[in-house]
Length: 321
Image (cartoon, rainbow, N blue to C red):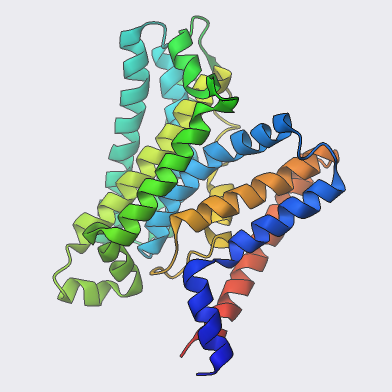
């Protein structure tokens, strides 16, 4: 192995390429628009990235385990609708509007995990099937209509709208989640087992790792985090269109892959996913400032996803022993 490859491997253990990309994107954005670095716009960038970011963190853990969870967009929608249908107007209903969607997200994640790890179903097919089921069930339940609540309590709306030092509370929660998941994945037995399962599931079974239990927990975590994002959406706007808010799976997956999580499992970091979320949020924010339409933003996300897959594939070949 050459000295340059060894040096890049050592550097990659401490500084992921996505963080250098983030710095470059921020510098370029600042040159493109003098509005970008304004305090208001910085808060906007953070707030725009939080909902997708929380979903992406759950998807990261699942993908490190070697599987995909593409039902997250539908879980976000279900949780937002459920929270508003409950009508959080007093402390008791606020608690229900938080607990029931989270429990539902965990239950759906458990079903996904058991189907994938116990029944050995393909995770892409299984979770897309779950997404269609949830979309159909929720749209049928509300007759395809917008869902809103007219008497939302300040305590519930404050979940997403309250600020500390000018920064929305969900941003602080996102940072906490990134730190906690980074520690869990790097320092705990559970985290090491997830990496092991993603690297070689059959070898993990032979080594005595409880693959079904551990793998199912990754889907439970993903379902709960997707539900949490849905609760924040309900708190933020108080009025959701079920047919329009389910598209969080693709942006989240883009961030996960852009952050360097391997599509085949066994590699990835929650912190790198967080950096990728910020990269995408900055790019989308600059395009909004420049009045680019939403289809163009989707096009750019597609190019970013394809480019990230190609870059990390070539990089792993280059750094392979």
